[in-house]
Length: 130
Ligand code: CTP
Image (cartoon, helix red, strand yellow):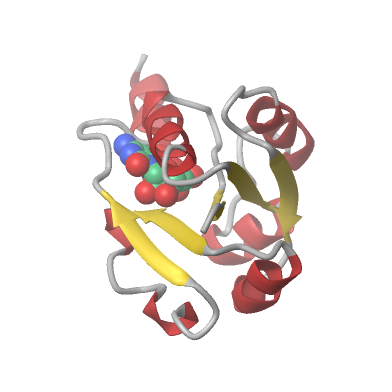
């Protein structure tokens, strides 16, 4: 049991992102991160991320505890990505608690506590008021 996978937008990279990726990495030997595409974010939130998928991928790839990064093009393809990357465990923040239980046929699912008081949305809102 050594290959961990996680998914996210990781826009406007912050310490909550570092914490979850570091803790996810500690659960195994190999951390794979699916960075959601610009189009996927647009279809979900009706706006593009501040940082492009290319920049978000560059940032995540540069972390010493991340071994592999790919672009997540579709939310429905979770099981395909898990199989393709031979992941043993899917890790997500507990804001997603229960919402990934449907992939339990493909791998173990672990929700880790979110870092309190920080999110990309909150940073954007604060910056708007300055
Ligand atoms: N995450 C976390 N602690 C935070 C913020 C995010 O553990 N304070 C985790 C999420 O649970 C997820 C991953 O980081 O597993 C990527 O989350 P993402 O949605 O990209 O970050 P948010 O800051 O939550 O962005 P937004 O406000 O746009 O939802």
